Image (cartoon, rainbow, N blue to C red):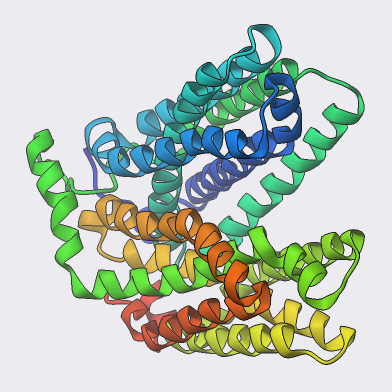
Length: 414
């Protein structure tokens, strides 16, 4: 076993290959997730489900994702990044194929539920692994790249959504569509994973023996007692809640709260996603120039201003300005949180897993909470909860201050 390579010991072509493999992993994750999401209407029709039953079906994906987050650190510790990522992508591909079979060949909601759980385990564990590898490659490169990696995930979701729309328009069955995506994912990871350094990027060091599973479990649980890590979790919780609430409720809030048409509501969501993507593409150089803490504080202020404009705007132009500011404000919280969690390379996998669990909690709990509040006080008023969480994220920003030395830490100073 070897220590994580440093800029001084790693050749530039090897570093480029490593970064390319990480970008590919982010793209695969986005592609797979959007491929499933784009065919939900076809899955519903193929299985003859109502809306409530679809919600129960999706719980299979949610529960599987949480399991994947919990086991990721152990897989990394036992198998190393190369083999662990192969296992995760293989589970993702198997889940996709089984979903297709459960919809198109032998329709069965329980079968698809299990397939979604397998898919979720693959996606959830891959989420941790690609963020751990991304943070390590970022340190080796000596500049901030995590936001761009997450922008690559967004690109994967766009491609996945477009492929899903094309498959639906051409009346391609769910089975053959998802089989094609599974093959693409497997080929991509087989080609690119060999460029990941043959090192364990979590709790192992040069020449150290592998830990027993009990020791890895204890290490994974111990990180939850780290106050700084929990504050990083607050940052991710607030920013992820801001992102997830827009994904689930923005279009409806524009329609029900501001009187937009359904088509205009879809355009509103498109503007938000575009702002998020732009924020992540340009975020790296900005973070290198000004540092994590000031940028996170600025993001919180921008996001709060955008939410207030969207909720209280007297006219349409102000609404769209608010949406753009909301998207820009929420864009960097999750990737910066992942980088900050992985600063301690010794326990990077366990720390990233913990912060990712907090982020997934926002995605899982946020939609129903806002729905209940919106039913009582209106969806626009319910969004004030998002504003409060963004305030807390801004206050917790100092927790993301880099503790490590080196080029990246110097550039990411407060």
